[in-house]
Image 1 (tube, helix red, strand yellow):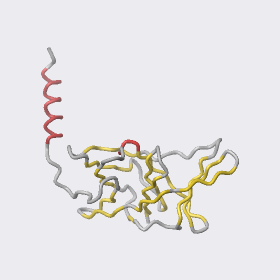
Image 2 (tube, helix red, strand yellow):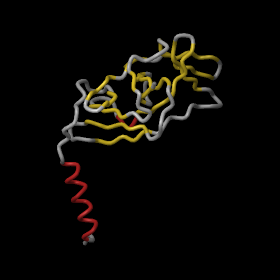
Image 3 (tube, rainbow, N blue to C red):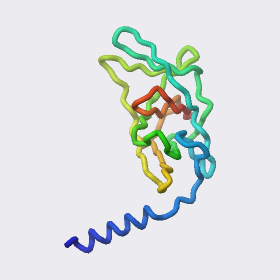
Image 4 (cartoon, helix red, strand yellow):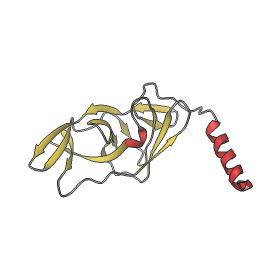
Length: 156
């Protein structure tokens, strides 16, 4: 027989999840939106291209700056998941050089993903994605680990 405290904790967890999410809802699935109070700003969805040089791969995105901008150093995103798996998203800082954004995956030195926390908010697959640390001003990309798709934004 389970202890009462464990049963109570399980009941509270089920009750908390059963509550209906009543915040802003992303209009398009599989696109992270920057959350600014009750306003949702779509991230810039692009496909990065690869440039190979010896054992190094540079992922390149056209344009020096993203059209999606936030003043928040710890941005929060909302996403309605359909085909994308929110837990597979990774956040990286991009370098802006020569009118484009890029990130280098070198054979000897891989870029470190910035820690994010993904929380399911509702049974209809609305997720909250939070950055676990403060971001410096610059260009960033939330990217699924299994594709060249990139959801770009700028912290200013």
